[in-house]
Image (cartoon, rainbow, N blue to C red):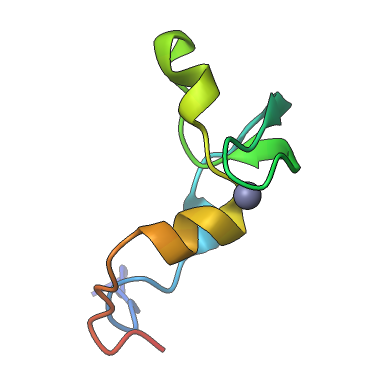
Length: 66
Ligand SMILES: [Zn+2]
């Protein structure tokens, strides 16, 4: 096999994730957001969360990723 799929489990390749850069503001801590891993919905620009707040907000679902 020429192609080896060396994926060490899920959630290890954030280098493959596309980032959208812009100038937004966190709705929680009012901190600046320069990058998002997704394209923000224009209708929800006032609901954006920075990385830290998003982390605290999102439920933990790590599949032993690490
Ligand atoms: Zn924040």
